[in-house]
Image 1 (cartoon, rainbow, N blue to C red):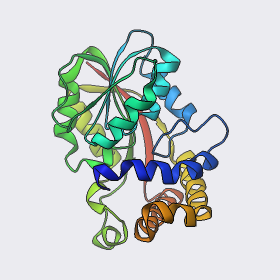
Image 2 (cartoon, helix red, strand yellow):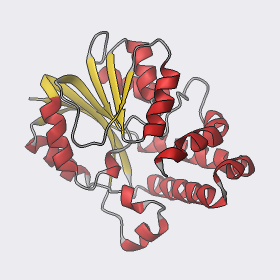
Image 3 (cartoon, rainbow, N blue to C red):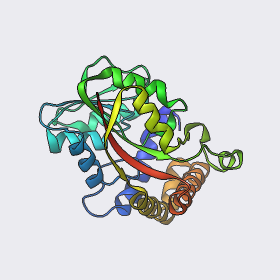
Length: 253
């Protein structure tokens, strides 16, 4: 998706996304996380009033705006898409969340008490250099909270089936844990979200398919087909255990 295409996608998918979530669980997230999961992870990371938070790859800022409104933190969200940041700023209102356009890495200068990376770890082919920068951006005792897709790298056949496969870089669970340890981040909590994210992926897929004509009118038939193909693959991978979804909090030792 090109940067200037974000607004049409947001408009096209809004109704289907709202329909896919239980009441109160949609916060304009562009992922499989529910609002309750976002809030629970933020609380485990110690986000509260006045805590400085850096949210990497924040997209249009739904979870960030939600966290700021609920917990009153000092929030900065960054994303490379100027279109996404424009939407995030426009919808931030008076809650005090800040949004900036930035390519990651490098990270904005810290230190921050919490760094978030929700649902976008898979977009980074090289995880450890990113984790090293995250550790450097954290204050002593700072926390890194993330969700990530655990699994063996995609096979060539899988990469051929997955649209935008150059943004899908799975990592084995033990490999990510070892990288966290090497950069000085100690895991304090972890939770397997595979089952709930599989259910969300299936609900989104059904909702997109039900709204297909309206979505295609906005973004085109090819983009719609790629959207559905990708979500069907995620449904299969999460349902069969090919991929596990993990949420964790690690502390800078």
